Image (tube, rainbow, N blue to C red; front, side):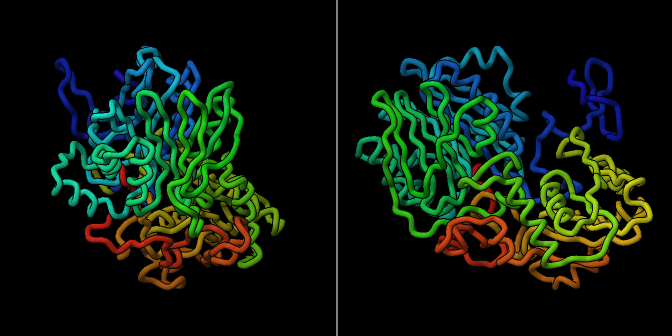
Length: 505
């Protein structure tokens, strides 16, 4: 029995051999569910992909690489390998360490692999949607893993179904497999044509019996990097995964680029020309690990600059600066360095409560806040506190954290946010609420301040954010996608049944 199956707080038990086992979670595995009922309404992770070509320990490397990308998706994990022209794969629901053990890894031979960690944005988690998705078609075996969202997938799906395609999953990712399978052209040209029909933000890994194909959308919305380990090539959603396995970073996969790896080596190609680079700004603000680099920009350093810029734009006299763990710590350090106000660990995160902690009553639900996040009384009591956070979604999280600090004795709580007001949904792979549920869509900054019970509130300006991140001079918004703040999206988004969030569902 897993250690987490302990008799606490949940009143609904199940019978197991005559004894009642009361679960710390609902469902069949630790992270089942998409966390919509989570006590913190933070933006949810997208997905992460990891690929290996030409290394004898491909499955083991993918296992460690997916561990490094676990923050991008915690509901399912999968690895597919190719060995002497034969596929071996395993997928499961839960964390990487729950899905794979030594025996599972040893059952996945081969020197080529693709792996995936997934966060579901739909109402239920399904093993059928866990990636990599694996198919058989006239050309052999095909496995597909992606991070992102295809905005026009519902339209393409209806078109393909009208032509006779039968879909086995509800995942947008399956669309690409059908487009490839229906093409009369050779594989690489079929892939190019298929990508040419997609609109959205995505990073794709496609494994066949003898090839690995890697692609990034024409705007580079979702990050994807390439590295080298020995004679093999490594691909990952973030550079931190390269560091984990000891691979050397080579470069970022460029927007619209198509890389083909086979017995003849690496071939660099394109399926689309760069029209407007638009890397997701939320990767820099929140999602990516601080030890990752995106387009040669280190995330920790960028977040420190966001904190410094906040201090320049919205200084307030205070006694301590604290950041909401984990993504806001770097920015809080930057704010403290710029102002000279001491940085303190005023908030501590408990990493072991799980995302889908369920409370049977509102009273216990409120206590659950303190199980996930605690204020350090001796640090904040009697102090004027500047609280740095990365975003405000619905506002409920900020209210709870501000109240935590007040209950611990903080005299004042001044909230500083390292992003502009989040007032529009994301169509490219981030799970965001309906626009009407975004507090910044319907309330002014002053109204938000009142709603979260803060003494003052300031959001980083859009020019300040762009300057802090850096990026590409001479390009629109220096090569960033700021659609969730500005409502200016780099692609068409108005499609019938267009979905927000991640296309893994």
